[in-house]
Image (cartoon, rainbow, N blue to C red; front, top):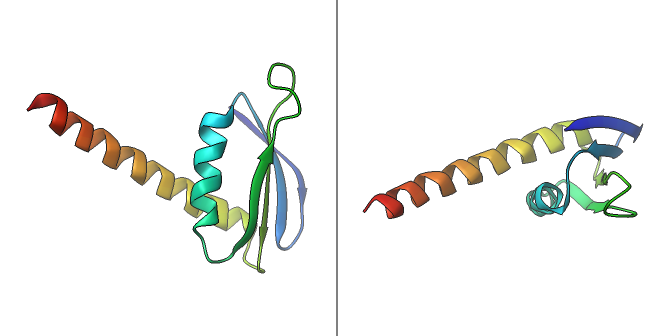
Length: 92
């Protein structure tokens, strides 16, 4: 995965997320939309086999980089919780 900040303002950011697909970006978008400071969180993939996805986030004034960091951490927690629950169910 490679991240490139295409454009950043006080409350908006566009980030190219090379090497990723709907799988990560849709999950991240969902977590972002649960943040009270996020007004818009979406991504676009122009062509699934030849273009890289671009994540767009607009906040109510909160730093979009900090909002994405927080959402990424929350996504990791959710994945860890799933792994732990799955292991418990699979073992017994």
